[in-house]
Length: 135
Image 1 (cartoon, rainbow, N blue to C red):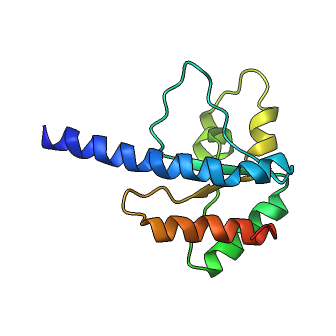
Image 2 (image 1 turned 60 degrees about the vertical axis):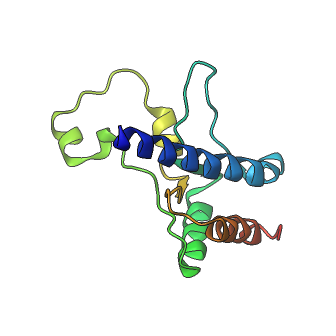
């Protein structure tokens, strides 16, 4: 029961962070600098990942370097399975993966750690806005 209570607390905090990012970065999306996640109506969100979809790999890399210089952990997302060694060896691709290939190098994940303080959250927001000259 204690573990479930902790899970609820972790999920609640991550969703607070996730929602704060969504609100803070909406103006960046409206100006065309990036795209934010789209949640289908049927989906549930546990806030375990927050990402920005940048317009190019170069901008993603520049933003990641900028944030890392400010000691903010920002990382690319993941390597698609078809690009891994095992995926290239035994994987079978059915259908188009053009969308995956199009976005895989433009995604940047931001921290959503349970222990991320409000001050650190604000520092992440301010740093991203500063990168795009909005702060």
